[in-house]
Image (cartoon, rainbow, N blue to C red; front, side, top):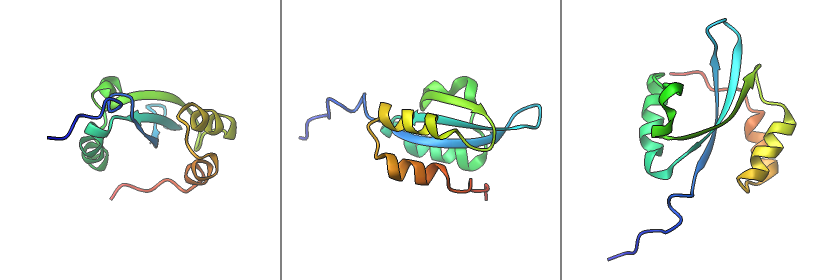
Length: 101
């Protein structure tokens, strides 16, 4: 029988989400998703049914802001906080947001 990973509670997948606020302006949002909740998160994301008021089910909201994309300083800080490769993180953050299917 395999031992449970003692770090499982600390692991996260960092995602960058985009959306439109009630006032019609765009926003971006970094979130940290628990590995055990990642598939469920992907399902609700695909359906366009993410409820940010109840996001703790999937993980934590890290930081958000108004605009089409986060400033580079924010991207660098999130990459540093979560010990993520900065160059690939910047590249991913500067990609065009994918449109829902």
